[in-house]
Picture 1 (cartoon, one colour):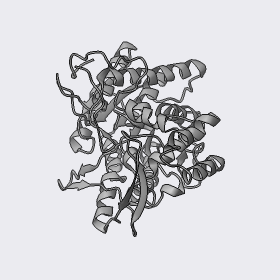
Picture 2: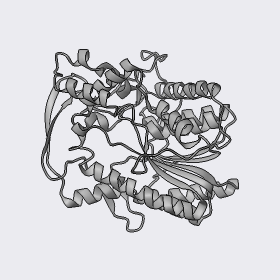
Picture 3: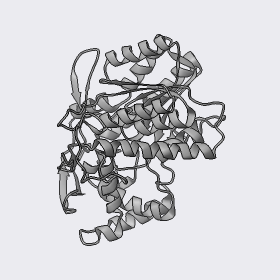
Picture 4: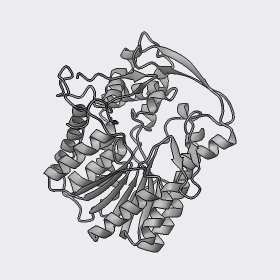
Length: 398
């Protein structure tokens, strides 16, 4: 069968197995090229657990840890497997490609396809570490999900993307037609805010760390890092000051508590890394963000400061976490990998451009072509070196 992207309401519903594998290969090759250029610090990760390991920053973190630092990695993500005739999720193919590449390089990797929010996943990871006779020295927390079941109560919580306090009005772009449309989002009620914090805040991260410490599988000096985003003021009403922002603030507050906990128990550290705005499966449906990211891409590519997930994560490891010195943070204790994005000159140009953009000048004034490329590449489409006219025999293997 010939696999073409199935896009509905700015969401891609399928994935190309060979395209996903090829993009994992691209990211690995980038890391290997950086490894050749650098002297690796003696202070490096050896046993890394990545929670949410299958796409985006989680996948890039796992690739950086394994292929730059030769770390053993344990990954957890919840993916829909492919069948002979039905596509799996992109992450399912990414995980297979990662494990295959790691094995070929002689690197140890274990991937658990299960709900990382569940206590069952924690038991599996802890048991695996004990069976291997090792302790984790880095835990990456990169989970993103619309739902979470509280393991204590069994209650299912759902997150929402809504403003708080007042309506939000903004435009979005249709991926297929490039047409603009106005969207109005009503403010969240308190239950929706609380539920979103329950799903995307720091509660689950803290549960992972405390249970791992209790079972003595955290190494002395262990670090843990969770990922977040702040973004420009023009997006704050729907993001930073909305329901998702409340969850992210809870995550950041959790990091401070966990940092004290880690210092006391394993002489360790806990951080939130504020990363750059990129195309993700969710950002394509957030009002304003497709405009903002498209313009940001154009500005940053022109000035040479553009980064994707793999570049960001390589820099996080080599320039922040493993320099042999203390980890640099801002006044709030946050690692800032968004410094190029939030450069005042960059933000000023983006703000000036976004007020002028329309359907006629979209491709001229922004890098919407680059936005589309990144949107499709997440699902294994528009990947260089893949013949998309070729027949794919099965969708449950490469």
